[in-house]
Image 1 (spheres, helix red, strand yellow):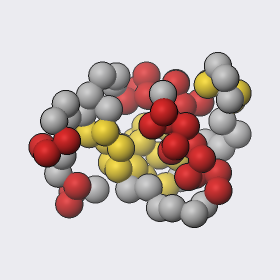
Image 2: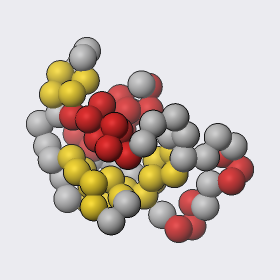
Image 3: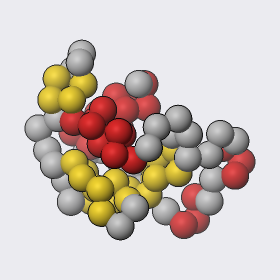
Image 4: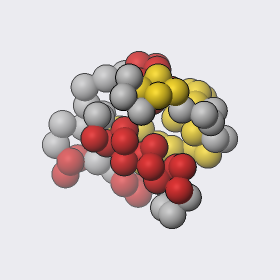
Length: 78
């Protein structure tokens, strides 16, 4: 949940370019749903979708990893 809020904040404020996220506990389709419809912060006003195994938020590609051990994340592929 905290990661989604950080991502949402980064997207809405435009201060950071997010190129990858890691969540070993949910699949990509559920990640999109959770991002779009946050029960506390409300519905995300931009576009969120899945294309070619990546998360697209406002038409910007974000690589998605599902590693439990962060040392195994291939950040260079993002």
